[in-house]
Every structure is written in structure tokens, then in C-alpha cells.
Length: 543
Image (cartoon, rainbow, N blue to C red; front, side, top):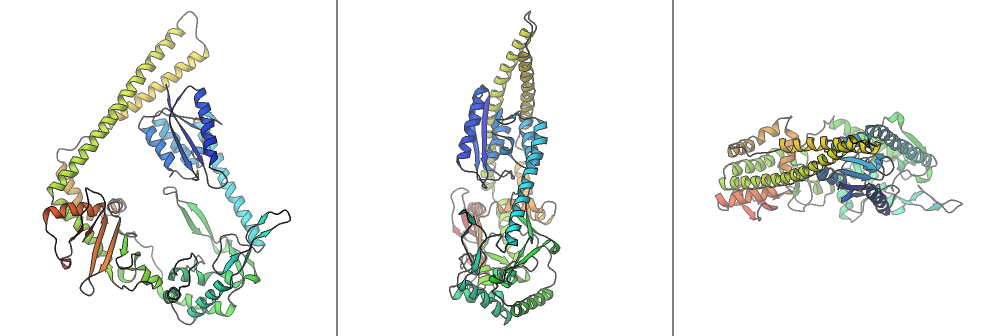
């Protein structure tokens, strides 16, 4: 019996969770009419169809490409994806694996469906975005907010004559508006955003999100007009269409892009004014002066350990500040941490890479464990490939018997009906697909190289050069980062020195190698064991 899977999805905009069950029910009815066997059901709840990064869809593709499926059922093609390129990609990958897509709405999917429906779905998304933007613009022109609640204001609930809610109503929040005035006055008096944030945090004043204040929350970006000091709503003026949002086709994340200032729109709302023109002008003049002094800033280079470095004193993130050094962001931005230790970017990266290179290359037992695990995984893949091959051989034999029966019927005196000829074409197409899949399984055979230990040592020793080469830098960075959970930087025993504590799979590897080759040493020597991990589970190690 033909093995089939069902895929269902609903987005987070206007559908409900029961939509998944409704889709599965419709697909199951169609599947049963076709005489297929349900092998697996995949679903993605409250996830947009404009991204491929969906666990249900990825699981479906993985099993289909592994030869475990022959048919995929969905309610409609837009359930698989609304993105034109993604629809084509899914169709190509499933067709390559010999898997056919069937939808309740369109039936068996062909290249024609992919082209036409993909275009229609893409136009639907574009039209929906335009209508949403038009609705928000109409709301803003009426003096109402087109976004979320802004600090200094509160939401006003209003209703029309039919009792329907009217969105976008705002009024000044007296408590928060005083904080806004204070921030503007202190900045105009010469206080830095960092100092203002520190004073507010010391007094227990909550920030816009209910947590501590950051210097960046106050300072914002002059180009994008965000942050407390750049928000023109405090002048009683709503500005919209300052930026647009796009989805990164690789990550699926929403990314903002500034629009040209000529495309911006403004609307005067005097009732929402908090700051007078004189104070606003003084603040903007100061910001312009400071901005010109700082000069143009180039796009920062992606760092090896960005986002992984934590302050060992407060647990907050450490960011790169002056002279390419990591400093505690809680101290720099909020003034809530008393530790002022820092470490140069190059020194921290060298500690991590040297620990990785020197210990991994010099430990034969660790290499033995690595080789053993590598061989074990190869064996598992071969066994799984063998199971798939046997299942495909059985199916191929059944298909050939079916072809023989069809040919025998066609050549008989009774002639051949259209249904028999259609069935013969289906069997022959499936035979070709199976032949292609079996060929790929044979070609995909992987054997361990006889000189594997030397290749291993060579690749590890080349890690630093791979990080320097722009062609391989990003891939090498991802490999190292995948082994690290976080890195804590603590003040050292000597002034200006820091201790580095690494936690993650890399730490467990270093721990394994370290306790086989050395005894614990003093912290001033730079490396000593903190916590021993079991196997290669996350552990903690100092560098």
C-alpha cells in the first residue's frame, strides 16, 4: 500500500487551532478515497506560510528525502507555502525523492499548479500587506496610533456606535510623562544616556518594557528616529512609514529597513505633546554635535564569540566597546553592575582557539573516541540505507508485477481501457522515480578515510586560518559557536587580568583531554579545571 503523509498549517493572523484538525480530517478523507496508507501527520501551528523554517515542514521533507514516503496530502498548496520560491523548492525536492503532492483543493500538483498558484499566493501576500498598510495609514491620519503603546502614554479604549472597538486611542500617562521630561532635561544639562539610565535604575524607575533602563533605549537611532530622545510623538506629532519590514529568505526573521524621509507621513496631535519646542531643539542640537564628533561608523565585522560572552560578576551580556574590548553591558548601558573588568577581543578568541587546537591535536585517546563515534554513526547510516533499499526493492518488484499484469491485459483480446493505460503510466513513472532514489542511495555511500587521524589533526590545526579567510570565515565561526553555550569573564587576581570560564560541549571536550594530560594548575597560569562533564555533555572549563 502507498505510504502517505498529511501536512497541515495555520498562520497566526486570523485562524484558530481547530483549523489544523479540520485540515487533517479533509486530507484523511481524500487519502482514504485514494487507497493510501497514512504513515505520519505533520503540522505547524501559528507559523506563517512565508517561511520555510517550520519544524513540521522540515520533518516532512527529511522523511520524504529518506525514502519513507510516496505521497504528501495537504488541504491546499498555500498550506505548504505562500512563498512562490518556497513552493517551487518544496515541489522540486519532493519530486526528486519520488514523492507526489496531492491537495484537496487542487488535486495532484504539477509544475502548472506551482507556477500559477505560487504566483497567486505571492500576490495575495503583497495585496494583504498593502491593505494592512492602508488601514494603518487611515488610522494615523485620524490622530490615532498605528503601532504599540509608546512610553509616556496609555491606551484609551473607545467604541463606535455599533459597540465595536476603535483601535489606536492614546492619552498621556502622567507618571511616565514626567520621566520623559526628566530624561530630556538631564540630557540637555549634559548628562550622558548611560548616566541617566543608571540614575533611573538606582531609583527603581521601570523602563518601557518593565525592566531596567538601557543607554540605547534613551539614545536610540537618529536615522530611524527611535529611542526616547528621538521620538517625535513627544512633540505632539505622529510620524509613520519611517521603515518597512522584510523577511530574510534564509533565516525567516523579520528585518527592518529605513524608508527615504520623502516617503514619511506626519500628523499633528497637540493633545499628546509632552516636550516643548525649545527643550526638543536643545536636545537635538546636542545629539547632532555628538554624532558629528563620533564620525562615520563602518558595519561591524561578525565576531567569533559575539552574544556568547557573559559577565562573571552579574551574569549579564558583555559587548564590544572602546578599543575592541568586551565590557559588561549592564555597567555600560544601565549602570547596574559594579564590575569594570574587560578583555580584548583578540585575547579572548585566542584563549578559546588555542585551547581547542592544542589539546585536541595532542590527545590520542580523544581522537580514538571521536573516531569510534564517527564509525558508529556511519554504521547507523549504512543500516538505515540498507532498510530503505530493501523496502524499495520490494516495492519495485511489486510495481514490475503490476506492469506485467497491465501489459498482459492490454495485449489480450479484451483490449485496454483508459484506466488501465493510466495505471500503467503511473507504475512506469513510479518505477523511474524509485530507480533514481536507489541510485542516490548507492552513490551516497560514505567510507572512512584510511588516513583519518592525520586529516583530523590537519583540519583542527587549520581552524585559525579558516577564521581569517573571508571565504570560509562564516562557516568556521558557526562550527566553533555550535560547541559553546556561553563564556563567563571574571575579574582576575591581578589588576587588569581576567579569568575565562567556558561552558558547553567544547568545554566537555577540553575537560576530557585536560584531565588525561595534566593536573589542575593555578588560575594565574590561565587554564584549570572547574567542573568535569560526563561524556561530551555541556561542562565548564577555564581557559
